Image (cartoon, rainbow, N blue to C red; front, side, top):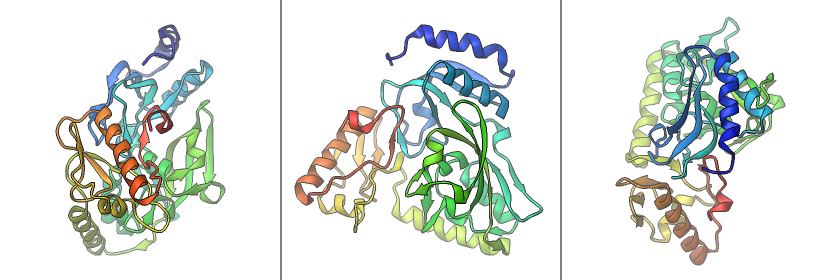
Length: 317
């Protein structure tokens, strides 16, 4: 971490600390690796857990005014944190007030950005609301799922979204209907430059809680049989046109390929697992090996699906 002068961060901290509530966390040099599913990576220059929307807006506006970069961290899946850390303000909506699940009189459900998808599914099942079962095994919060249009088992987050509430990076609030948003595979354009506060979701229908739980259990069993159990960031590469990245990597004989503590999963070739105290450098090196071997054997340029948190893949590939 080096690009932004310490004086800029000191001025930011001095400006915002008196404006934040007592339950909002704001610290320097917080390690990010333990907050991710891959379990690798260095510290954030500044790390914050705002307790409410007002404190989040204060943090965003102050960083924006000083030109300081902001990065949102949800459950820490679908990303790799570099060993050197992140030269920016990393914000995580882990306070309980962000984890709301509130059925509405009109049939919709309000969910806070910090609510884990696993908890969303459990609460929906208890309420007899179907349509969310595919989310159960996605290791994400609502905010991250919206940002990435997370999907599994043939379902996608925005399949069940009606309306999203967000803050721009300048701290201004906006409310957008799904029809006004630009969403595609693993991407929501509006949330590239904004932070989701939460969303109104539209259940498919009311159903028997036991039937919903049975469907969740079916998906869980399928996932456990097809995905590795070791720490990972999920699927590393996007699927090329007409095939799957896992199939191509497997056909190139790369299952079990290892650099340091990072290994191509023997269960699913599109997963890199943290087999033994891997570093981000191990993972990036293995990504480069996989891309080179697949390019040489099949002429396919595999593109990363996971984020290189706080950085850009083009700098390391």
